[in-house]
Amino acid sequence: MICRVGDSIFRRLIDLQLRIGTPMNFKISRVCAIAFILLSSFHLFAEPTAAPGNNAEPADVPAIPAKTRPFGATGSEPTSVYKAPQAGGDFLPVPDRWRIGFPESYRQNMRGSAVDPYHQNFLKGDYAIPGTDNKFMVLTLTSDTLFEARRLPVPSGVSTVRSGSFAFFGSGRQALVNENLILSLELFQGDTAFKPRDWEVRATTVFNGSYVHASELGLINPDVRRGQDRGDTWIGFQELFVEKKLADLSANYDFASVRLGIQGFNSDFRGFLFSDNEPGVRFFGNLDNNRTQWNLAWFTQLEKDTNSGLNRLDIRGQNVFVGNLYRQDFLVPGYTAQLSLHANLDDSHARLDDNGVIVRPSPIGTIHDKHVQAYYLGWAGDGHLGPINITHQFYQALGNESFNPIAGHRVNINAQFAAVELSLDRDWMRYRLGFAYSSGDHDPTSGTARGFDSIFDNPNFAGGGTSFFTRQAVRLTGSGVNLVNRNSFVPDLRTSKDQGQANFVNPGLLLYNAGVDADVTPKLRLTGNISYLQFDTTAPLQLLLHQNKISRDIGIDYSVGVQYRPLLNNNVIINFGAAALVPANGFKDIYTSQTLYSVFTGLTVTY
Image (cartoon, rainbow, N blue to C red; front, side, top):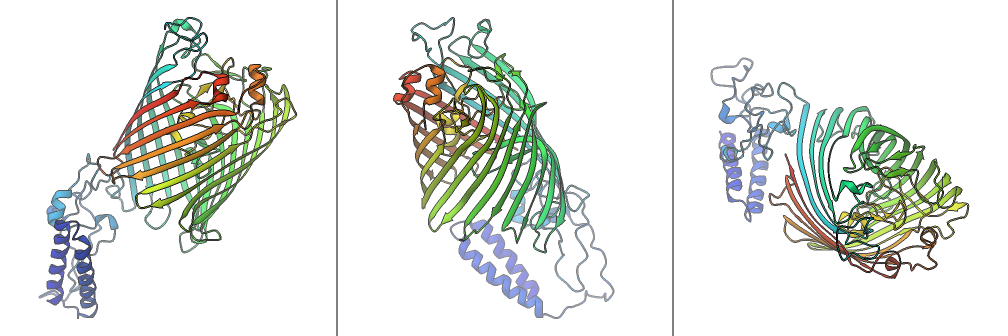
């Protein structure tokens, strides 16, 4: 009797807590916790009583009334998880965690359905698939819309349509609309709250549509008769893989698994070297109570669609091998260290992109096919040392290019990359200082290539995709290569990051950054960054552009970003960013003194 009364009081306390909300939740939670402990003690020591008039084995529980079933799409389905009560017991055991109910008053406000992504729903993995106990499905639908305006240093073209253009440079104004519709389906088995999935199958398809308007002719297509506008569509598979757990390695759920197929992989903390979705085989797992994680992977690169950057289904003849090892709490608590080895073996054949522009081999210097064999030794760390947050990365690149078009012969690779970011949290503010170094080639015609280049980077550093120098591709005047490619800050003189080949004869970069992140409210985040940019050397640029003197100073990159989540979750995200590059002498020596800018707005809606 005491237990029943206590249970009734406990349920009322929970209901009261949910009704009151903040700021009384903490006090009510303490009362609930004390009540729970006392009631648990009563249950431990109370004598079991048999059901009135029945001392036999308990019978099966009849069908659960609909109003007492757990809410959600699966909650309305008949289920076998409700078992018979223990003899004389007052509770029904619920073996699976996803059917734990709530008080009725709370239940009515939270009841979900198959089309409701915000409350419990088996379509997003809150329940097992109906008719199963440990197989789950996650269906994700995402609309990612981007509007962007920018000004780039571009030639006025063979036939300009705008009066007032400079003798060589046009206005450079461009507008872009890009829409990605993403459909992703996951099927997996396992109690993943405590251990890795037993197996998983995942497919992600992206439907892309884009429109670009340029002020000058000959930019979006070499044929000036195509005009100033381009619309394009593409469908790409960004994920299509199966995963299987191979073994449990300890009682603490250390494991080894394998994943086969098109999959996303980021090989370091900030995406400095390889971050892409490619077909391959990846073995991965952990050891020592998850303090050690490891990856062994092989990827064969696919050709990319030129205008969307999504995968085509053509193998391009480039293989990437990755092995890395992470150790948590290395030397000090809160700091994770990483060692890595990468190999980029690129035997890609000649190719024109979808707009008719040559991307392989590089159309500069001596045009000739080449093979790249580049090996990267890496050391990285991420975490905190006391109150200071730290992220750092170092890569040593070795290997060879069978023929470098700038050097005009075979070169051996000896290049370095380093980056470090220190930050300090003060309440809702984070203050950051960062530095990045990409080595340049001071003697571009020698037999050693000292300019660093990545495999397929996507760096989240110094403002990431908000900053102008990282976000925008800037074509090098009078050549068929880019000074810097979109979503990369390494000035590698490639034709394209997506479809070109790595080039280790380049000017390199020095980047000095100061930034701040502010969580103004749980819904609103602001970021600001100022970066000063310099070439490590300008010798390759002087050789290509036939200029005797080019200053090392590129300019100052200012950027701000705003992220707003109106629903306090990631179902609706609104992003805004603005950046400006104020040229310094080195940039003016190559281009113009105009301030370049980039402004974008993005809307991401996810089911």
